[in-house]
Amino acid sequence: MMKSEIISMHVMSVRQKLIGEYLAFQCIWNCHMLLVIGLAVHEDQAQPIYTRENISAEEAVAAANTQSKTTLTEFMKLNQTDSLSRQLLYQEVPEHYTWSTGKVRSRRKTKTFAIGRIFFVSPRQRERYYLRLLLLNRKGFTSFQSMRTVNGIVYSTYQEACLRLNLISNNDEYDVVMEEVANNVVSISAIIDFLALLLIHCEIPDCCQFFETHKHHMIDERQDVHNDLELLQLLNRSLQCKGTSLLEFPALPRPFKCYCTE
Figure 1 (cartoon, rainbow, N blue to C red):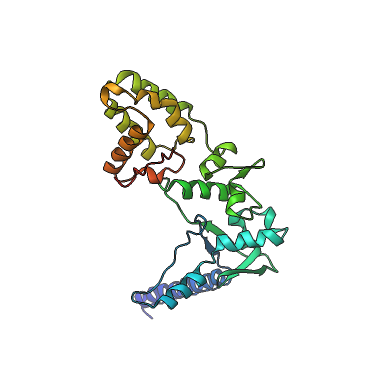
Figure 2 (figure 1 turned 90 degrees about the horizontal axis):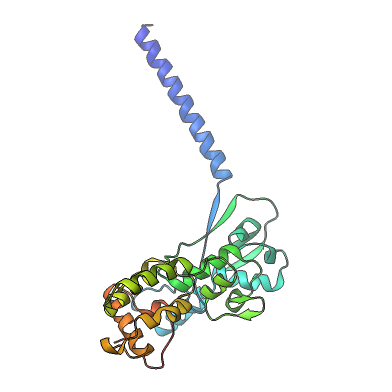
């Protein structure tokens, strides 16, 4: 047998061995594959519903009823009756419970390679973002209201709850920046534009308190800004020019007059 043939056979043997080891590894990995469960994050009665085009009203209602159950709503139901689940964080649930066809099934009998991953939420989706932060850090919640409850006080927004739990810091660093701008910029519109940029690009912990603290810099009759309502209208226009609106900031004051669609 020629030397080249021997080398060729040796190469084929090594290749076959590597392929065999790879297939064996894949088999073992598939048997013990890490099962990743995507966990929903949505506000109360705001579950996404998916349907086909041109379906009947009855089919749409059926789809809504079926898809109204999510991993989040079912975990809340589980916490109402199960003492073990109340000791777990939301993302830890798949490790201990099975999930199938719209409901939490049962406790897993054996240790499994299953983990939960809460879906990503952009900071621009303010309340969903802070709800996700609460889900990552709180145990035992049984309703959306309980997620906003801290020391027996029900807060109106998830952001406020995060603030009270010290999951986000206070406004101090933003207060300093805002004061510096207000003391060095003459134009009220420029200050309002700067406030809009802060709201969009920074995670101001307490937007309502921040607005109340600094609104006096932007209310000036000499520049035709006479009160909170007019200031909020101008702020909303500035936000709209940047692709958003005050509707994205539920913690901010809500004047009686509807200004967000102007």
